[in-house]
Length: 338
Image 1 (tube, one colour):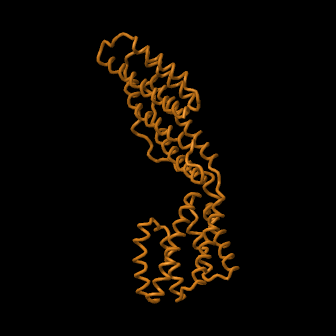
Image 2 (cartoon, rainbow, N blue to C red):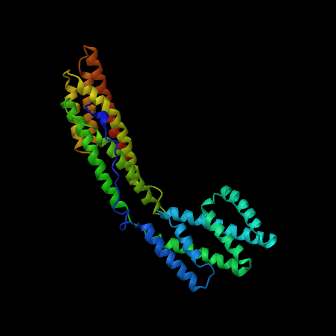
Image 3 (cartoon, helix red, strand yellow):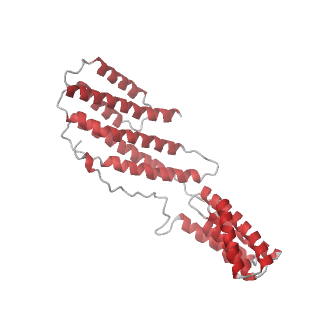
C-alpha cells in the first residue's frame, strides 16, 4: 500500500479536560494544599507537638485515585506504628544516641521490605526522629504521635474522597477511536477499488495512542470507586485494541490484493464490505455483517478454480482477509454478549 511504511511516528499527546483544574495546578495539588492546612489547624487546636507533621502525612498520602490513597494510608500507618513501638523500646533500653538511631533504621528497613511497607519508610523515620528529639518515650508522647498520624490520614481520606468523573472523557475517546477505525476501514475499501490511491496509514498509529490513553483514564475511573473492580469501558477498549491488531495484519494483504491487475469480482465485493462496516463501526448489531461475510465466503468457494499462480495467490489472500474480518467482527460480538 503506497506510503504505508511512512506512518507518522509522532504520536499525538492528548490530555483529558478533567486532568487539569487550572494552569499549573491539578486536582491533587489543590487537595494537598487544602488538606495540609486543615491538618495543621486541627493538630494545633489540640496543642499537639510537631503539628506540621500532620500536613506532611496528608501530602504524602494523597494519590491520584481513591484506591491508591487507601493503600498508601495503610502502609504509612502500619509502618509508622511499628516504628513508634520499636523506636520507643530501642531508645529507652539503649539510650538516645546517634548509633542507636542508625541501628534502628538498619533494623526497620528489612522489616518494611518483608512486610511490603517501604512506602511508609519516610513517615516512620520522622516518627522515630520525633522520639529521638524529645529524648523520652512516655505515654503522652506516644499518643501525641498517634493523634498526628490519625489526623493526617483522616484528612487525606476526606479530601481525596472528592474525585472528578472521567466518564465523559472516556466517551470522548471512544468517539475518536471509532472515527479512526472508520477512516482505516474506508481506506481499505478505497484502495481495493483504486490501487493508485495514496494513504500514509497515520490513523493506525493515532488510534493506538488514543486507545492507550483511554485505558489509563478508564483504570483511574475504576480505582476511584472502592467497591468496583471491573469496567465495561476498559473491556470495550481491550476489544478495540484486539481489533486494531487485526487491522494491522490486514494492511499488507490489502496492499497485495489491490496491486494485482487481475479482475476478480470478490475483490470488489470485499471493498464494498469494508465500506459497509466502516459506516457502522459504532453499531452494536453485527449479525447482518456476519451473514454477508458468510455469503461472500460461499461465493469464493463456488468460483472456478484459479488458472494461474497469481490468481491462486490473490484468491488465497482474499480468503485470508475474509477470515480476519470475521475475527474482527467476532471479537466485538463476544464483548457485546458478555
